[in-house]
Length: 140
Image (tube, rainbow, N blue to C red; front, top):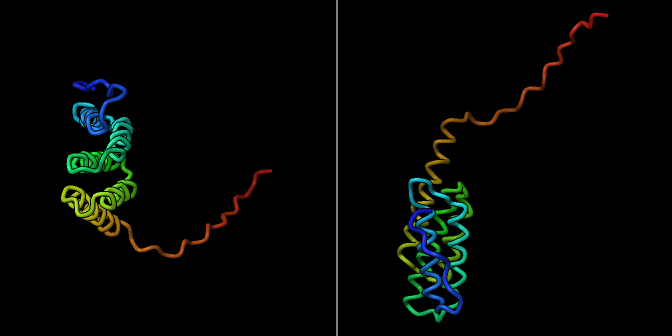
């Protein structure tokens, strides 16, 4: 992707390494050609690095952003349930994080709307009619 920084060097502080992975993830989610599956891998690395740090406020922000981007990548991959789980995990690690609470709310609402429109489009399930046994006269 354009403007994608190289992966972090070995021995970098966890917050620095996580931030580099977040930049890479953002680059992969950006137009003109987003690559959500690759972005997801970078977000996973950011989460791993951010989770190993000292749990200070700076790292909490990095972790929040990592879960935010990981969720965004999952939504782009159409894995809505997985994205919701991602936000739940993030909120367990950083309770009441405003960004993740908002992400979760937005996603829940859009999933609900998706459900609603799906329910409007599909008639209620009815018993499937048994397949009609049509006997074709075989020409012998």
